[in-house]
Amino acid sequence: MKVYSIAIDGPAGSGKSTIAKILSERLGIVYVDTGAMYRTVAYYCIKNGIPTTDGQAVAEALKSIKLDIEMKDGVQHMLLNGEDVTAFIRTAEVGQGASDVGTFVPVRDRLVEIQQEMAAKISVVMDGRDIGTVVLPKAEVKIYLNAHVEERAKRRLKEFELAGKSCSLEEVVEQIKVRDHNDMTREYNPLRKADDAVEIDTTGLTVDEVADKVLEVVKEKTGEI
Ligand code: DC
Image (cartoon, rainbow, N blue to C red; front, side, top):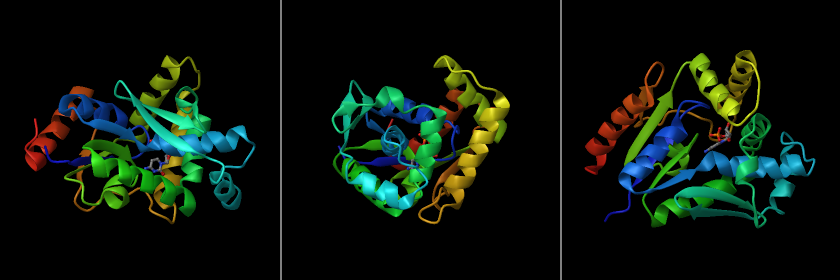
């Protein structure tokens, strides 16, 4: 079967990973979570006292980072210098750190290369901020998910609560606004919708409704399903 790619981009909490997981299961292709790679670099910096906003220090730290991605039962595990850090990278602090290190050219160039290598060999659904624009500009399907900031914050809050962390909705709204600004205004490959991406506003839609819309686009563009 032909190797094909599905690129999903959008801001924090727009539903990218939920939809990517559904597509991965339905289509039997690998889900690549690129945010987890930026999070792993940020986690290394935070753990080693390196400020995630210091470009030179982060570039230097990159030399000490060996990043491996392992797929176990369809779940992506991030290995940092051989240690599985998957369980530690989903905090708000690491999320903001990932947004910070993602502004630096050496970090982006290194991670984009890994992502492109993965998609060259196998069919993937990959989510992130620059997938349709930079990583996989020739992807057969490009989706841009969006939603109002309050709704995105409510989704993130639910995830935090499920993970046993407490914070207020106002705090999460603020965190998301900072991240949106950072991700959309960085100089090098900012978050933006690719010209040929299909934009879906997920505000007020259920997961099933969004999945149906996306699957319709996949069917139309690839003939798969
Ligand atoms: O999708 P996420 O919340 O796990 O991503 C965390 C941060 O990583 C995000 O705010 C910006 C950065 N990122 C990026 O710059 N490019 C990507 N392709 C994926 C994530």
